Length: 216
Image 1 (cartoon, rainbow, N blue to C red):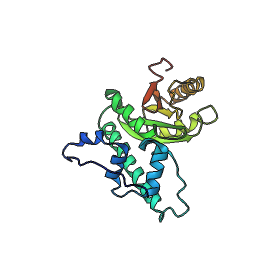
Image 2 (spheres, rainbow, N blue to C red):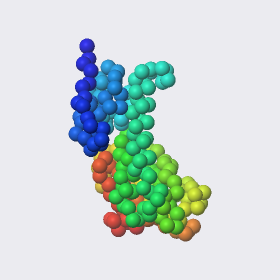
Image 3 (cartoon, one colour):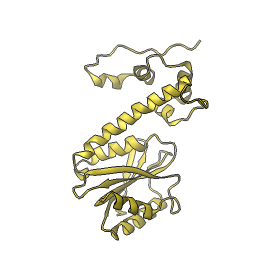
Image 4 (cartoon, one colour):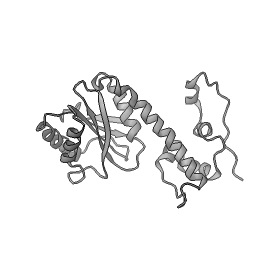
């Protein structure tokens, strides 16, 4: 019989105390009675972060399977975190809060098991208009189409863009393909008078700015 995951009492007036909880205890805060199947998945994955990156075989009846309901609840919590980190970008200039921008981008992409290429579309004051994920797969000339980025920039009436993609390998170092697509995208955007401010690479907790590397 699989033992229930135990959690310690916590003073809800001190949210910082949540940081001291183990992954198992934190899971109990989200799911007071986690299923045995979910507990087995957590043990097999080794961490809550890896659990969220995995796609367990939960059967065809997604709306009925208990593990499926737990899976949806965990990802709802993850989506709340993503929106929380995005809130400051709606009211302040992205350039005035680079750390908030990086936290937002990490929340969006650090746990994805595959590469995603997206863009932050900004107005003339560099406030966030929209964040969109445009391409999924490996980052190369065939996968990232500058014309689609340009089309969306015009749709949003954007004045500037920050491009972003993740490295699921956990290695943040940019490749030659990363640098090439950054230059191509910057040149293409300049034709419609939209600035490419940066291209950020997310690899787990690490970030690399290609603007800081001198690529732009």
